[in-house]
Amino acid sequence: MNGLAARALDDAPVIVVMGVSGCGKSTLAKWLAVHFGLTLIEADDHHSAANRAHMAAGLALTDAMREPFVRSLCRAIGSELGGCVVAFSALRRTHRQRLRALGRPLL
Image (tube, rainbow, N blue to C red; front, side, top):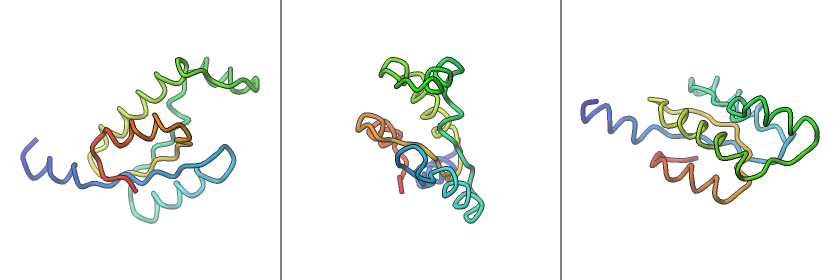
């Protein structure tokens, strides 16, 4: 990657739509992605089938169960060459810190 491309990646914002389950994160994130012409990254798409089944049974995920999900989500955000919109609860401080650690501007 040349210097200009690396600079563009560093400056490409990541719009994170955060909140509790059912508050409209996905709806707003989809609208923002379309409006600004950005890629939409839906955090829920990064859960394993086992995690989805666990949550569907009304059970909370453990931190150990969340780790591969957060790692996959961060990898997807990091590989996005332009700005993107992310629908993600990000309710845990450690998850927000992981997003900041990507080194991209967060909105």
